[in-house]
Length: 409
Ligand SMILES: Cc1cc2nc3c(=O)[nH]c(=O)nc-3n(C[C@H](O)[C@H](O)[C@H](O)COP(=O)(O)OP(=O)(O)OC[C@H]3O[C@@H](n4cnc5c(N)ncnc54)[C@H](O)[C@@H]3O)c2cc1C
Image (tube, protein in one colour):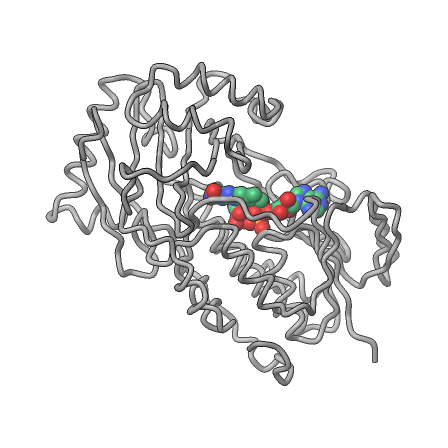
């Protein structure tokens, strides 16, 4: 009997995680990634609750722990960088702005790719341009002109997935959250600490700096979009236009903003997006399915994006391997993941604008609230404020599907 085959679009978190599990279950796995090579970029992401359990089952928890960014907690700063309130990392598997398992996106993606031990075929610098679901398989045409057949195709190519667009003409929407974020890596200086330092100015502007384990510092410039939330606004700018835009927007901002603006030209990994959530009525059509941000992007402010991808990949792989018919597999995947995703997408009221006030009075009020929330008396309350529903899922056990170990596990 031939091995079942899958083509996955996207080599970030969801794609390589899905390929890893399916390889263990005896599938032939191929990933097509639009970028010309493995993407190392990205900043601190959290592994929470059930995602941590999935890593344990994959035998990767120690590798992720070893790649921890070393962040000790989150500090909100006021004028001149004075500390307004601080929230140290919590030992809980779900709570806290800084999760106990913090890792850079590129480092986590690399761990999944390496754990695949060369058993997944990677096609870089290419993408799917046509899909023909014949009923018995899917004929895929790649931009390079190659045509191949797979049993199943999965889009794991992010919030703006173009693979999704080839199959889901309707039933999917992108809900803008009214905020733009630009991420870049900057040289580390003695002023940087092991804290996630977060500085706001009126006008909905924020500068944050976070430690990494590569001797550099990860910076984010974020701004609330007032009025027209045109989702595509940020995406339509070129990189140079975005730099000019930021230089104007943050010209008057204090603390470390001038340093981050100075570093824009030297940053080779600058990445910017207008954040939003993907709502899809269904995550599959025929033999094509969605996973990760392409299926349900909850946004960076949910604190759950990567955890959902890790858990979703585990469940989708398990259901595919457990069922002979892909329709049963996709139904099982929806049944297990849908309630988990729905909860993760439910953001606290006012997020993200509440943490990025528009007026000076609003900023002062926010800081008073932070001081109260960080006091020992209110500790429990603040824990709840920063606690996404990361463990609100009954993880199925697919261990019986694993092949006799032939890889690093
Ligand atoms: C370079 C990068 C940096 C990031 N930095 C952060 C960050 O700092 N903080 C944060 O919270 N989140 C960040 N994210 C998003 C974060 O990784 C996701 O929200 C989450 O982990 C879910 O991952 P995903 O694999 O579903 O999607 P994504 O991480 O968005 O990955 C999608 C992948 O698909 C690829 N791709 C896109 N279109 C196509 C196509 N048509 N065909 C083939 N491949 C395609 C992309 O290059 C990317 O590798 C970043 C993503 C990337 C790609």
